[in-house]
Length: 293
Image (cartoon, rainbow, N blue to C red):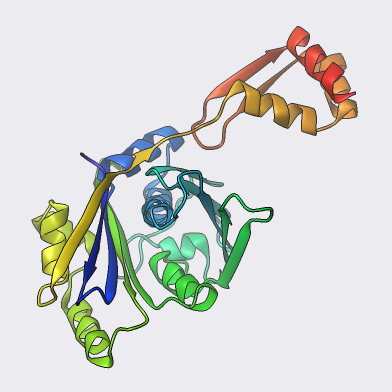
């Protein structure tokens, strides 16, 4: 299992823990979207967190999407995940170039922007989806997820995310964790956790020395009793199809479809998530036009 999320509990089941190793998944996304290093880091962090959040969903058909829309030049990041470990995503401006920060790190906060919103939409099979949102606090992604959990879900959480891009622009390491404090946790557990997290290196620094998720988990929660519940494979997977894009074309309305048929005689649509191209010839468009009328 190359890409996975370990779900665990700790501190006498007062902490809920998700730990993700997503190096190959983020590299696959980099190749699909041809992202620059800073865009790779922004998208990779978001995909990693969204994959972990997908595994928090209860129903097998439940889905969630995370939209990060800041004032920065990357414009928007969108990621979608389900309860089975499937995740997909894209950035609006994959070719953004920014100078490194003063500390030599990629300026993800500058790319995303420090003002804006994170919007989480959960489709739980009900009449209306659940929509939660929070203001961005830094644009560095992990802190923004921490703020989202605190303000929108009233769930105290520690979120760490990391993507290390190599000199040849490939992804060397990617992963992260979400540690959530459950309601019955006493003050001593919270203080102990805070002290522990102060001394833990950054995600990718840790992954440089320890590549195995279970070992990272032990280091992360050393001194707490840890019980691993399961280990789930996560994968970059797109569910686009001809049928879905037919519906999209019908939804633009008969006037727009008629213009396409008369002016171009064909249409080509590209899926934002996987860059797959779909070609619709004149005959196909005429069939869709008949359905739209």
